[in-house]
Image 1: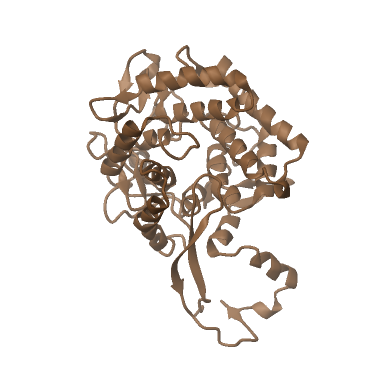
Image 2: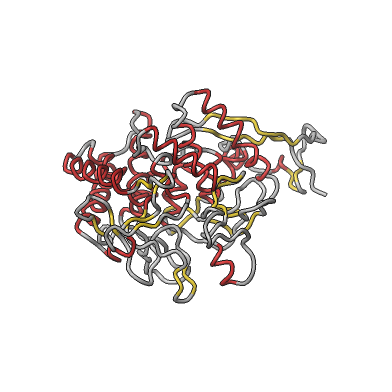
Length: 432
């Protein structure tokens, strides 16, 4: 029988790319049998090389060590695996996960290498969404991966402003050019109907393609096509314009036009929240009022909140009241007719449930930041959030993929974990 060594689970709480604060979240206590010879699961630690011990000591908590599992080699560089056991490296997942795996944990060198490597893959203003398991041709079927890349670049450059982490002139220029290539490509128009419309908002989508993170396609069935102007895509687009506009004034007017249109066109007065998609199927004025978690990104999860205080608070109240569960947000409100409570059945049944109610832990970080923001971002609000939202994740770390966070859970109690037991962007909620 394997004896468990003494260690402390520690959750990290922080927002943006500021240094995370450590929270002791529980302990496993088991004494060592011999102070001179340590054995864990039959491994004699006294025989581990000094260099290996030094490497392991760099990961100061179990969560740091868990993060290392997702950073793997690709060719001569590194990449981020989206999840185990069946995901490879996905663009969207990489740039979302990087904020926790690399920036919040101080792995700035790895972050720089990753971003520079992905810059070389840009085509027609887009970074790939996925590298296939076999073959070398990347797939570009995503509207948001490129925008998440822009956000990741800006947060990386912000985290490396100090002299100790200064970025080389060549790398900075390459990353900034990559950002401009994306914004210019999206403004002029690129694959799959992705283009900046006359109202300053980003339109995207063609029949038969799934371009947002709600990306299930079973045969010819695209479960959540979301063609038009999806709400979180606008949040990403406007944040990308605003952040880039700080140093490149060309993007300031497009941001102002887009922000005005967003506030005018996305507010659903009847339900006191945001529409999920406007100009559905590129039909002007057609709106999807379905209650989904995507509106959260207009308030939290990104550097800039797009709503005034009253509307931001109403969005958070809507999401908290209809979508919040202990381990994440439901992908669809139980009040909607297509809601599915459990991720069960055959392939078609599971695909049909994947974004139709199933809970996604990766969304929790954006929600918690939104929740704190509408409370003024005070220290007391952060402390209250920590107390209210972290215990369920603490328990989950010891109940499914040990030390990690699952990809999804059922939408109703007991919120059974499903999908990948080891998911990078879910794990990030413990450190950002």
